[in-house]
View 1 (cartoon, one colour):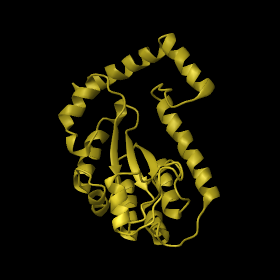
View 2 (cartoon, rainbow, N blue to C red):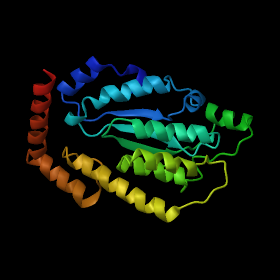
View 3 (cartoon, helix red, strand yellow):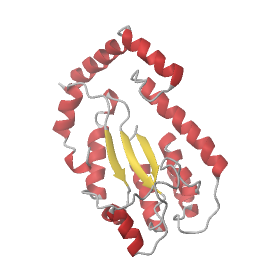
Length: 230
């Protein structure tokens, strides 16, 4: 979904019809970066869309929002703006956290070359692996838990953009990301959605689907949502 296309009545109809998942690209909480990415939305429009979707989160898997990190053109304020936006978003939600990678023969590549700024290509490293900076770790933490406001504001003192030399915390990132992945899986389990699980757990999900357990659970949730939405 695009933020500008999110309308309450539209989401209501979709949820009543059985929609169980919403995914929307936020990319950044900075208007400066949204303009850079040429996104058809502002922070205000995105915030309105997130607030509308939040009204229906009791009847679906936690909505998923895409976030792009590690943009070497971001300023410190851009990073802080994204962190503040994430902190203030209504819960529950899940973040799809990506590291910016540049594809060849794209306008994004031209933008970086014109500004004479170094960048990471899609061939250099997986876009799911972010840099182990304090700011990136904080994004993962906010997905897991809304820390107290005072602690959050204090933490912003140690947030820096990618372009600034800073200490990195690869072990801390690995631990926090593991917790994030576990909680993300738990959110899907609550709706008996096994699509993101590999191996044995994925096969268990297929068994639940085969015997009708998943269908029964979805019908129960759908009946509950219709009772509320009517």
